[in-house]
Image: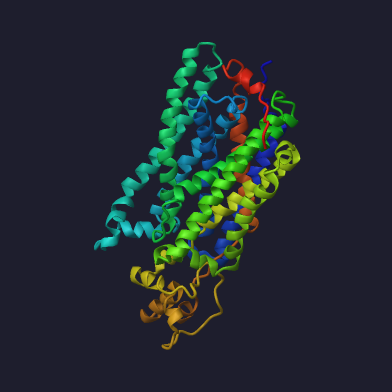
Length: 470
């Protein structure tokens, strides 16, 4: 029996309310920036927009990857959830272009998130270590490649949703041709998924780099996408849809969720351990400046406990993966855990790269005792000639000294950069707003065609799925 999702006015109203809360969150953060952080060029607002856009775009992108990988591998396990995975990509069609807009607005100095990279691209005298970065962060090349990724994602999302509607036909040639489309997407995904993590997140701090960052993002996208799919399957079943999907199918999704949680943990540990052990200043300063702030010091390890500890202790059990309440709770927890993880990478200190000179920034890396960044401003202090060595090696104090030497106003010279740290009411509301937009686009796409691909050649095999092992 063909079943098509009915996107009811009541559900639409609920999602519009969620998007309305997001708008309230944006206004709340914007007002807070005006009152307490005006000099930061609304960095808190734009960091929120970047974190949420990047996160939900990645979830949608991974949905396409699941379909493509299963199709190329002649898999049947994802057949009944195929339309759900495809509909996850609806947000990706606009999310990619939103990332392009965020980047362009940074280059127009509407916000300061990418000032570090932009300043490198405009250097007249290029140090040897920045030779390739000047080319990489060139305006046309940078915007052009992000625009290319967004366009490719848009075209593949439209093409795969349209093409897999045709696989309901009984002609086997149509199904075989889908493998060519999926293989092409996997190649495009492998390149663009890693590159977008460098262009939009790692470029926030041009001094820091990680050769594992693309894989790290892939694992995090995967955890969030599997968790989102599990919640959507449970929701659709609660509304009377997809009755053919049972605890065996949810158990199968739970195994992937557990597996990707372990993969993410492996990437987290390898990245952190190798950078800690090597003790290279360009790598360690990323962690030093965060560990100086209690919020980040706690949440960096808290996300490890949530994103690995919970799956290890609970989802490893067979019964937990077959219990809708237990795996539903775990999915919510992991979606939030991976969002906080992305949040910690995205919220780079505002104006620090803009205000600090390159040589001061480089010198500050040599001292790991204390880096005063991302924290509330200290009480006003009078700049004196006997400033301690530790203070001299922080970008904040270097900025104060620079202002004093140039004859800046005394009040301004005495006051370090004011910034913010942590997830507050504004961050929560903006996340809810983005979630509402993501789900609205998902359900609108899902309602366009039957949820179950009735004539898929692997449908009968998938209906008989029995998960024997844990």
